[in-house]
Length: 275
Image (tube, rainbow, N blue to C red; front, top):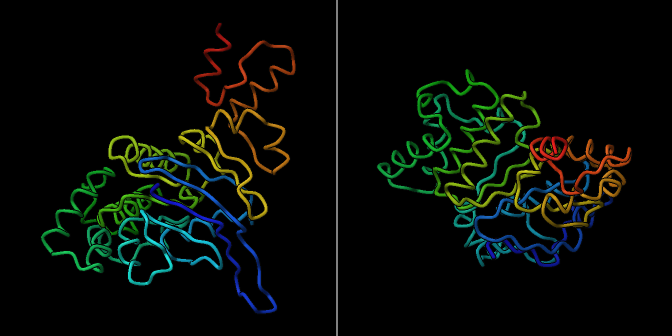
């Protein structure tokens, strides 16, 4: 397994009057090259869990292993962060340089890569996210979707094996969301990069190989998108939506239309109705 969490719990402000248990007794296994979406309402613990994957947070109890490396071993932290790249919700919070190529090269420079290797990595990373033509632009003149692709390139330039994206499209318009999702799907499909994708958009989660559902600090469900979105009533009880096509198919079945249970996207719905 590339990522393993063993009975992982995290308490903020432990021992203080305002201590808060955010994640409790979580066990997950993620294989190399998997595309895993994580769903949950605000406060369910999904962002706290994600921050354990590259050591931004350390377990209060239990373990988080990255490619066999324990995140609590300080001597392994740089290597863990080389392998796990993070992309957050607000792209402006991740921009630290005045020029795109300098921003992408910031991470590789900080881990001590040779300048020639940095230049090669920056060019390769910008090509992967289709942003090479913007390498001499100011990041602040880019659209939101373009900024997120630059943030992704910054992780790729460090030869990362996994991208953890924490609601990366939440602040983007539909075009920006599409750009980011197409980039993420391509990196997983064509480059074999492991993806952990936290989102509130169910159509985005439907593109994953597997979905983990968090509720009240725990993993409460795991399965393929078709398995997870099949039980619409349970999803709604947990405060979560389902893809529009799945919801429409469910309502059509309630009206007596014969239609499969496994519909999660528009293409499946169209095919079923046209029959």
